[in-house]
Amino acid sequence: MTGLQGRHFLSTLDFSVDEVTGLVDLALDLKRSRRSAALERMVSVLLFFNPSVRTRVSCEAAMVRYGGSAITIQPGKDTWNFEAGEGVVMDGNTQEHVRELAPVLSRMANFIGIRKCELITVGNDKATVTGSYPELARDFFMHRLAEFSEVPVINLESNRFHPMQGLADMATMRERFPEPRGTKYVLTWAWHPKSLPVATPHSQLLSAADLGMDVTVLRPEGWSLEPAVLAAARARAESRGGSVRETDDIAAAYRGAKVVCAKAWGSLDYYGRFDEEVRRKQPLRADWIVDEAKMARTDDAIFMHCLPVRRNVVVADGVLDSRRGVVVDEAENRVWTAAAVFAALGGRVR
Ligand code: CP
Image 1 (cartoon, rainbow, N blue to C red):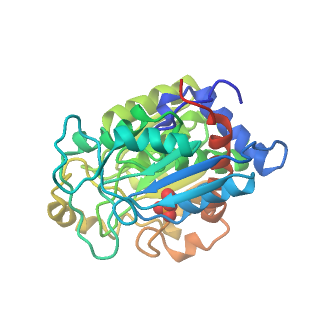
Image 2 (cartoon, helix red, strand yellow):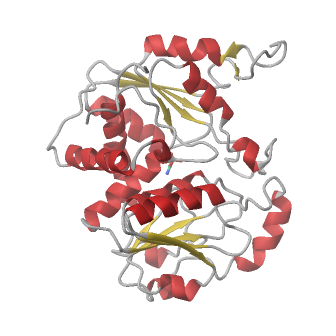
């Protein structure tokens, strides 16, 4: 692919629909060995502020598969603590500023990947955030890293977007629906004991929109996605002959669907007030699992999820383990889409 060299990959919204679908075409060609990715002697440095299985392994595997290498570091655990603010007097817990970090890594590596999402917790940790959603959605640190980087910065999940997941979802749907335009796609909110980020559902919504699908966002009142992202998705879907609508009507949403993609996400209305959100969503638990009865209303839909998934909370075993469950294929496509991103974007930032 030409024209993408030296660009950051922070959101698919920074790319035209043609550029995004071109990356998916490249990924599927790499998977079928129709093209190769020239990553020999290239290095990716991957900053993981949060845990990961798929994102980390797919990026590392993509680099190694095509002759490059990847170095994963966990900021704050095996590095200095990083600072991004302007004019900060660094007499506290941060030792290194992105003004040095980004150009230094740029001299040592060809790509900088970053996963930094304030709302990801592990185990029994309670979700806590220090800012409002609009503040966190600025993804300040990631954008500062990109500002001072001389090589492409790749978003491996921020507060607002997870574009690498979006690309893998597009590839997975393109494999099953070579012409997905007008195909009914349902992105359903799922009950979950925790408040999770909106980054993945935002990028999944955009992935279906960019394919020109007829997208239904199924969510309870109070769990709408960000209005600006919904508007962008609607415009991009309509430019491709598709559509985007929101509903809380579960039965109608599933009817005729060819794709059901489930994801739990936290309410933007209750952002930062997670105890209140948990109380409010408790009565929703029984109705918002993806189960066999709901899938029976679809037009033999496939079931997608980004993983990891909580079995029998988000989705019933009977759906996940059936021939409709494509989550492992979806995860595998993370490798091919990561390789496509590295191959297409490699080059100095202009
Ligand atoms: N889907 C996804 O990003 O998985 P990980 O959190 O394991 O990277």
